[in-house]
Image (cartoon, rainbow, N blue to C red):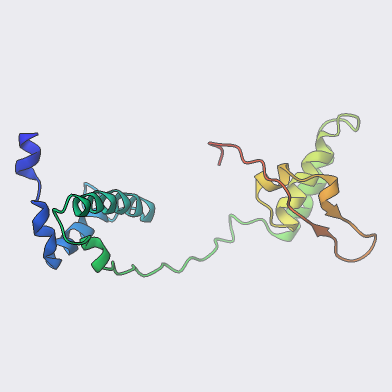
Length: 160
């Protein structure tokens, strides 16, 4: 604890806005000095914010210094889709056709896979949404557009 007391900034110094900016900058950096991920920054900021709220409750601070300062948002990078890694319509049709050859007709695994990947491609569903899809969720007219109502998702933890 003595090392912690020596190495830590006295809580009263956070009344100075310059110190608060230093704190915020530190929250947004990794140990190697490179910028931290946005979620990492948010998680760290939430922990520090709650600790400072506790300091206010104990009357070590008059108000939470993080409430007075806004962090400048970084410029969002323009993201361009790499055409080499995105399925094009021809590839999607060929994949769905190839899936009909998987397993035997009685096992129906190829038909299930075709329906699964067809939903991912044509309806832009996430895998968990396609897994939770039931026939009763679909309105499929003989002609024209159909309708899918996503009633359930079946996400699998730890799967990407």
